[in-house]
Length: 139
Image (cartoon, rainbow, N blue to C red):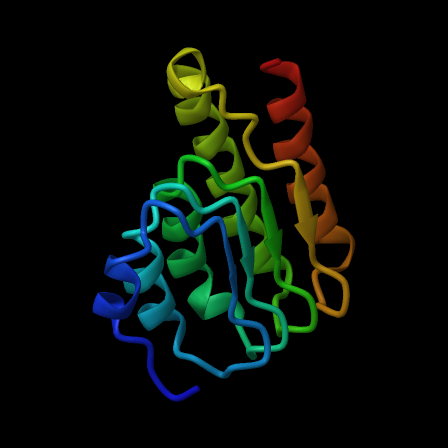
C-alpha cells in the first residue's frame, strides 16, 4: 500500500471499528489524515511500519482524536524512549478527554497497547508506567 486516500474511508466511517494497516509502510501522516474521519474506530494496527520517535507526535494526534479507540498495535516499529514519552502524554490526554465523554457514549478508553519489538527500554517503560498509573487512578 503506497497511499491511503481519506475519501475511500468516507463512506464507511460511521461503521468501521477496526483498521489494520500493519506492514503497509504507509506514511504515518496519511494514516492520521484517514483515521481522523473514523469516529467509531476502536482498534488500530500499525505494526511493522518503521514508525520512529520522530513520528510519535502524529501517533499521539491519532490517539487524541479517536474517542472510541481501545486498542493500538504498534509492534515491531522503531520506537524508543522519546517516542514512549510522547505516547505516554497522549495516553494521559486521551484519558482526560475520555472521562469527559464517558457519560455520553460509554467509552472505556485505551485498554490494550502492543509495543513489543520496539526499543523503548527502561526509560520508556517508566514513562508508560507513569501514564498508565495516572490513567488507572482516574477510574
